[in-house]
Image (cartoon, rainbow, N blue to C red; front, side):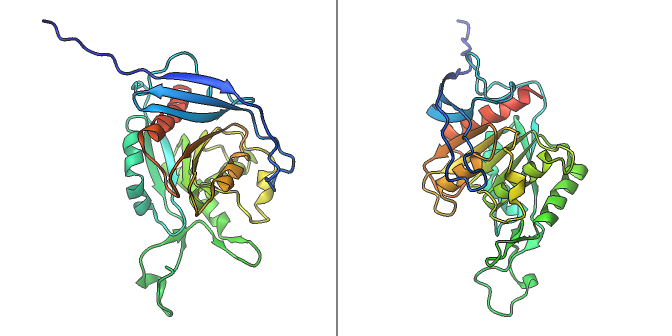
Length: 286
């Protein structure tokens, strides 16, 4: 008897558009209107999940779902390259380990590369008089001045990322976690302001927030045009959900993925579907 070969599971996507609302809480954009969102319900072998994808104003190569899509279909084009920015008090090698599961989720779809924040941070538990050479490596993209809200060293981080793009690029997207997500948003905003050549076509921001530094706020006076995926933990106590949602309103066509966990990048099956769907859309439009 001839063996039967089953075809890969397909995923059905259903979309509906919701009404936009005014982001009254967005201090950078008084009266700014949150873009229309399309609510995409994904039904497949991983179950059901809902993702909000920017509607009005979305580029034609992103956010449009036509018919049935095979979520796990392997494309012939090479994997996308994504530059990854760690969170506060982390470092590149540590973040590589923390995103190992994400790397497996995006296998053959995207390659992840990592860059380390240029500023050393003293661990909170370090005894008085300890030097940085004597403590475990902890890094940051800037150091906050509580009195003035100044982000000391943010420009050095922008310069570092720009150098990494020149030396190790090109890259297709940028991914950031926590402070790294804020730094990625700053870079994308500066990129849009024509401060340097466009380096990234999309952004994935997990547990991110809008910068409070006064000198950075002008960069966010205009919605950032590149497509973005915002990962929001509904029980996040480090960066509460409403803070991450605030960041999403600073982008012209944001997609928002909620998960029930806290301050981390989830890789449960429903989240895996969202990541691959988002990245594959840009892989197809390369």
